[in-house]
Length: 146
Length: 146
Image (cartoon, rainbow over the protein chains, first blue to last red):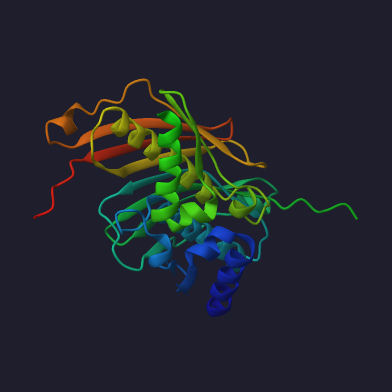
């Protein structure tokens, strides 16, 4: 199931977010708690030959977004995931193909079950190089008119 | 002079940051205090058909980076500009071609003149939709060995 989900997640990113496809972002592993993602290095360089700060942020935020999406799948729920706020600290330059990790042992989506917005705060790390904290909101999907 | 600088800034982004070229980010105006930049909308969409949160952040951070670069040009200095920390609040979805603005009436680069790192905090807005605060560091350029 996890393997199928990470394939679906990668396909979803590539088909709906052109910049994510350009960055080569892909989900590579999910063990039930931790989502691991990768991106291309060459596509995401800056003028110093290291990873562009904007790409590091995008990689991290999609990893957090993906962890929430996996929680929706695991709990059999539907919702629109949006980012409300992001903060990132850059500790050292990224000089090789980046890998991000986001661990969450439990994602509380009980508000969503009751038709309300669920708020999820997550931390994503890119090795020792960067640490991202994001506040995501999951909105109930409003049924379309028939 | 300002017109030449914004052309150089756009060319610098496109030639050294592949993702910035993909995003269609360009400097469009500088009046001595305020740098205005634009990006393509279609290239930066997400699965909701609005602007990808990562692209909003990348657009904002390059605008702040550009304002520091313009301060270097105006003060006749050289330095490597890196982002140490970024924070962004998303207030509403971006549904049309985005425009970012960064205003700084004075950028204190006195530390750089003395061979030390200069620290510059800047705010960038994307209309009413997003507000970014970045802490940049400008490092003295170390001369290459002959």
